[in-house]
Image (tube, rainbow, N blue to C red; front, side, top):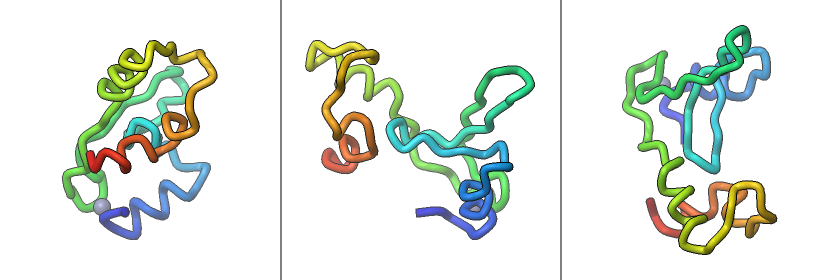
Amino acid sequence: MECCQLLKYNLDDSRSPLNYNEVFRDYYFDLKGMQAVQSIKYCPFCATPLPEQLAEQWFEELEKLGLEPGDDLPEALRSDRWWKDKNL
Ligand SMILES: [Zn+2]
């Protein structure tokens, strides 16, 4: 759930550098010219704190299952379901 219309609008617009990775619950800027991404902790439009990013927990989850990121992962781990199921 987005905190404001401007954030929602930017996430929906493919021309915007602002993106959301549902697997990691990660809001980030795609720095295309630098071939890098920069995660953000606050909404750049209304300054609401964004939910905690879960990349580290995702890798821990894979490790528990003895899986590697390149493996054929369970469907839940390829979407936001794994952290929603855990109420993270
Ligand atoms: Zn906002």
